[in-house]
Image (cartoon, rainbow, N blue to C red; front, side, top):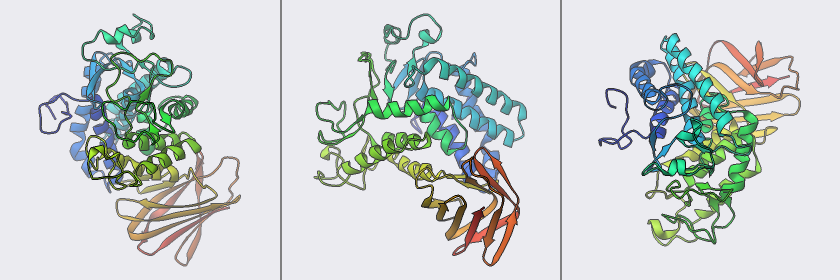
Amino acid sequence: MSPEGKIPFRIGLDYDAAIDGQLGAVLASYREYLCSGSGKWLAQNWDNIEKAMDYVIERWDSDEDGFFQGLSHNTLDASMTGTSSWIGSMYVAALRASSKMAKLNNDIQKGGRYSALADTAAKNQDSALFNGEYYIQLPESSVQGEAAVENMQVAQKYSGSRELINGSSIDQLLGQWWASQLDLGWIYDKQNTTNAARAIFKYNFKDKLEGIKQYPRKFAADSDGGMLIATWPGDDRPDNHIKYADEIMSGFEYSAASMMIYAGLRDEPYKVLKTAAKRYDGRLRKDCYLKDYNGNPFGDVECGFFYARPLSIWSVLTAYQGFSFNGPEKSLGFAPNIDFDDHVSFFVTNSGWGTYQQTFSGSLKAVITVDYGFVELKTLRLKMPEEHKIKKVLLKAGQVQRAMDFERIDGFIVIKMPEILKIKTGRSLDVICL
């Protein structure tokens, strides 16, 4: 990191910052705090995290209206003008995470500033970027009111820029993907977000890739299906469109599918995941290299073999189980988005792993079993439909059962333990909500 807060996007080399990578580093820092067991790591690193966040504000949003000025480089190996929901939603999520981290480090004033800017950016972006069906990009002059969105020459006048404009991007809600995992709330209007999630599937997913020129790299066979990085439903693709628009990369597909799950979709994310899995069944694999149509079921290919981005598949698990965890606060939560009435899934915390099971038929019965390590609990949050009235909550650990006080907050039953409850290897915690 430079003294002013710039993080080169090629580690160890004197590169410029990539705005999505810079914001991702801020968000990943908050994730590391949540996954830790204390606030020690955050306290040690907060000064640098704060610098990284402030660098984005001062360089690209100096007037603090939530819209970016000038060119901003990104990890699609190009620069973009103005504001897209892809980067814009990440900006809002990073500001919210920074607000929480500032307050955790007793900087209440800075936390308030980040929070206010996040609210402003979210409101302005949602109003300006949603086209009634999905989220687009406004080149810089369009945001300032000097040209209409349809005037693609606004973006094209910038030498070297690569633009989306009216395109449907697979990553248009990437900030929401982060926010859902980090319990940061909805970035944009919830209904707009759900509509945009549906539009991504409608416009970017293809059952077959026949007739589509995958360029500059071909990562799937013509007989395969997949989700394109970007498409232009209005047939208004700019000449200087984003570089990898016509490629299929599973790391993007997995995060988009996860975001769709959080947005309440069911069939669409399943089809995206099933189609990606079919590409990796080994049927076309000739050898372990890029031109073998990704056949190796253990090696997702992007800009290299066994690429890192497809590890975003983990977020599909946490989305389906509605998992939330705050290690320092010893808080654990589940809100299954699949098989709510009869759910079983695997979970991991910073100190152990195990299974979560629940059944629901008017009353909710949940079992948290630790198979390795231990889990310490101070607060447990379980999703409960608002229409179901709960009169009593019982907790059973070993042979001890007790009635617990609880609150209903934002669709959850929230149970606060009188003291830290430690679930050890081979032990279970039973919860009954009557």
